Image (cartoon, rainbow, N blue to C red; front, side, top):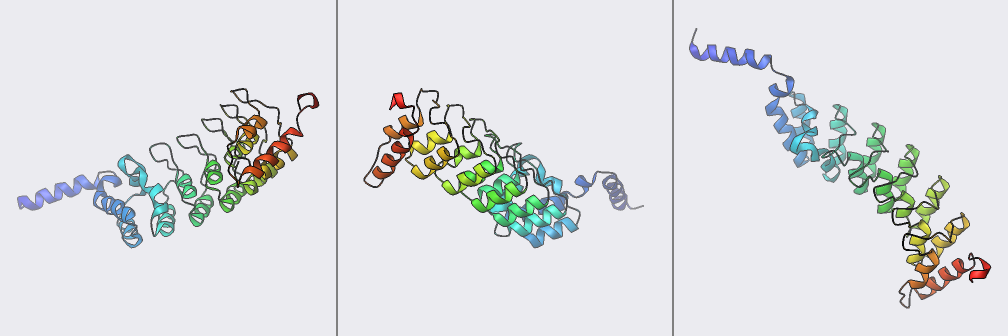
Length: 261
């Protein structure tokens, strides 16, 4: 037998006995490149040629699933990968999930797709923020509704002790939604801050009124010994915020014990 063909024969036997991931190396490389470039057609071709979606879930490629949400073809790419059993809760460097990334990018279609595929709504990122924390911080009420409909926990605590409600201090609509779903109005973070402290500190009189109506405690002090009223009084105002400060102070003064007024 010709020595060249004999070598080919043994190489073929070697490859046949290798794991699929080794035999599919060229296709895997093409898949990684296609996902990076947002090329759904080439990604599908690579998968049909034996590429494994697991290559997107290890080493330097772990960022790829999170980057899908920013791709021009992100939704179609994500759908393709998920249909090929890409792990929906795969974490980037053991931290951010695709759902976190989609929420942070306000990508509602991708959020919906990930939820339909079973994304973990309780997953936490490097700050222990859940997707709900991220949605509240971004002020996206539609995504918040989607997460709550998927049974996202309403009072998860991040590494700073913040619940999602503590991120809603400047958005009364979202604040009311979270409270209606059971958010704790007297939740306290590691600095002793409550939602009322935050709302009062920026003179958000509408939020202060809502929190007080929902039984927020105006007498709670933070780690520095200050109440919400103290922060309202310390607020630096401009001509446009003076009225809000005055109304905020009035609302809080009315809730003080008579002897301290």
